[in-house]
Every structure is written in structure tokens, then in C-alpha cells.
Length: 564
Image 1 (spheres, rainbow, N blue to C red):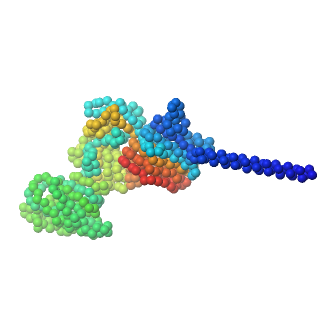
Image 2: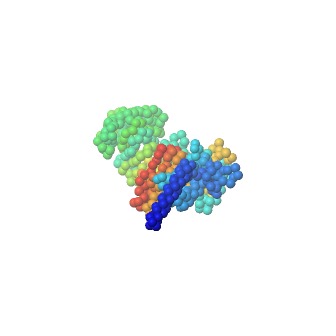
Image 3: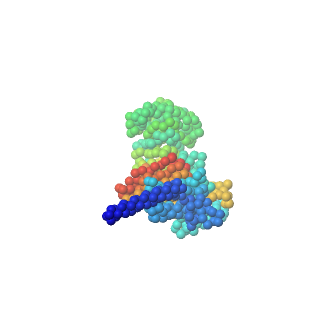
């Protein structure tokens, strides 16, 4: 009997324990359900009116001014780190940025410690229909007048900190003091010097002038009045590209006359097989100086070695020979070597047969002032055509030799042979500060000098100098191979950061840096963001050196709008 009673009591105890466990589980489920229905995500707020000492749980400061949103993204990031460390990061986290500008003194960095989870991603996004702007710089003011200039002191520059290469005024990128001056009416074809040649004769051809809008100009001296026929010594192989002939695709004009289309430009059989062709154009030219302008109107390519203007209608060169016959008595031949152009435009224009230097080039007489090389931070910006490794090189100006007309440059960015026709300008020389919107930063004195436009107002205008290059970086751990995961940026605007000379000189000009820089990150999202007045590329994606940092997926949800 005692044995049966013992079994009964044990069974009753197990039943009670079972029902108690069941009841607790039901209560936990109910409470969890209530909690989840009340809040499906963890929310923080950031505002320019916020305070990093507050909780970040309110979208605006309370009436007492004792609580409200955070002031910085870094503070919100640190709050999420604390959640993760305490094991409370079990739901998605959204950090809402309120309207306004967020000025940064340093890059906001995220590492593996800041990663979210598949069911709990971390999102930084614009609040409702607002437009927060994350600024990679700071405001400057306290300008005083110095003649036509405005000047302000920047002690941090004198101390070796805070040097910058960009200036933004009222949402516009201003112009670092330069020569030639920027021509806003035609910034792609005007406002440049051109690398000159120091060789003459046949054997040098102008090529890569295949883009619509490419052009060459020549200064010519006509010895006598007359009707001059135009010939060209050229090579072409366009048929494999779907262009059967270059007839009527290019044209020439003299001075301000009308364009005359060129004909007789069939394929020669190869890009190095040259022949003479009379191109169906003649000009009535008065003796004296003229400008001959050739332009590619429709695309397609020619390699051009020489032009000839001849007032002898019976003159006939041998097709593939560069030793030209003399014109008839009393007639005149004007031979123009194609590489001797004085002005040009073309993103890839090059002179084949020439051996350029990476550290020096010849300049046109009268273009440069040797004293410009005395400016400690003087630079030359060169659109070089000698290498696909870079598009724009920014090199330090070392010396200008007025006798040899040679310019010497140096710097790690000087990687390409500099060729005749390469466009360039001189920048960051105080003597060149000569027109509105230009500025110069005196590193030694720590002074910013600015020539304002007529509508500038010291009371209303906003002047921003960059403090950083990268605004946000996500960097995985190379040692452990742990990436940054599940972080999203949605609906934000990034503006006013700086650049460095090396940003555009690696990997076909694509650079290896960005306003948002992701190195060893996975399953991260950047969507519906704007990049306005930025100094670096919008988003740079880099695979980590550790094989585990495969950067396998970046989801760029909606198209990124980039305005520079």
C-alpha cells in the first residue's frame, strides 16, 4: 500500500510540475507576444538639436530639455554596441536621422563588433520625409576683408592639421586658384594648357581622336593669297567597327568660317598604313596668320600624320610616300605635321612614336611663369593619355625651365608618360588667385584666402571646409576574417568631403577610396542615398586580403544618385 501511495504521489508531483512548466511557458509566450506586438524593433533618434548625454529614445527634445535624441551617429553606434554586448540585440534596430546637417571631424568607423544579424539588421535612415545631410567638414566664418579678398585664420592648418583641398560655398564647389582660369561656359574644352612636342617630322601620328567632339587646331602662316587645296596623310581601319568610310564624318574650318566635311577617307588597310588623300576641300586664304581647325563630328577614328595645303591644283604626292614633290613655280606648299597642333580636345588623344617622360614635359612658350614653381604646394593636374592606369594625375610642381621650356614634376601619382596634347593646368599658387570663386590656402600662415562673387554675404552664406575624406567606413577584421554584416544606410545624403591626389590613379582611374568605404563587408545595404559635392567616389567596395573577407554581396537597392 505504501508503495502504491508513493507511486501516486510521484505521479501527482510530475503532473503538477508539468502543468506548472506549461503555465510558465504560456505566460512567457503571452508576454513575448505582447512585447513583440508593442515593439517589433529597437529605435534610436539622432538630431542636430540632440545631445549625446540623452537616451536617444525620443524623436525631439522633451519640454524640460532633459531628454531627447542623440546628436551624433557615433553615439548611436556605441549605444547599439552596448545592446549587443548585453545580449539584448534580438530585434532589428533602426536609427532615424532627423532633418539637418551633421558636421564630422572624423570618419565614422564600423567593425565586426557593429554587425547586425539576419533577423536583427541595423539600419541608419532618414526620418519619414526628412532630408538629413552628413557633412565631411565644418563651417568656417570670421572673414575679414583684404582688398578684393576675404581672409580667415585657421590655426589648425598652421599646426599641421586640417589641411584641405576643397572649399564649398552655398552648396557650390569653389575653384582652387589656377591657370588657365576655369571657363564655366565650356569647362571640358577650354581652360587648359597643352603639353607640347619637342620633335618634328614624319613618324609621329596623332591618334585616339575617335570621339565625337574631338578636335585639333593648328596655327598656320600663309605665304601668299590663293586657293589652297587640303590633303591629309592618314591611316584608318574602321570597317571592323561597322564604319565603312570616314567620309563626311569629320570636317575642317579656317578661322571663324564654316565647317567643310572631308571625303576620300576610306580604310587604308591598317592603323599604321598611311596614305595621302585629297579630301575635297579648298579654301581661299589671304596671306598671313590663320587657324586651321579639324573636328570629329560623328565618331570613328583616323590616325593623322600630316596635313598639306597647296595652291597648285595639279600637285600630286605619291600615295604612301612622305618625300613630297615640289609645287609648280610660283605655287606654295604648306606642310603641317599633325603632332604640331597648338590646341586640342580629346579624352584619349595621343601621339604615337613619341617617348614621353613621367616626370617632365615641354610647355608652350609664354604659357607658364617660372616663379609659380616657388609656391610650396603648387600642383599640376594632368589629363594624361600615356597609360590606362590613371585618368587624372595630380603631381607636385618642382621646377619650370624657361630656356628649355621644360616642366619638372614629381609624386607617386606621376605614373604615365606625358604626351603632346595632354591637357593640364597649374593649381594652388597664390599669384593665380585672380577671379571670383577662386581660393587659396596658405599652409604656412594658416590663412584661407577667398575671392567671393558679388552675391556673397558674410551673414547669410555658408562656407564649409572638409575635415575628412571617407565619411563612413565598414572594415572587417583581417586577422580573424570576420566581416561587417547587416548594416544598412537608407535615404541619407553625403556631402562636402575631401580628396587626395591618389584617389583617382589606381585601376583605370576608378580609385581605391570612397565617401562610403566598405572593406570586407557582407549583406550590407546602401539604398536611396545621394552623394552631392563629394571629394571621393561615392561607394568603394574592397575585398579583404583574408580569404574569409570575401565581400560576397553588396546590395545597392535603389539607384544611388551622385551629383558632383
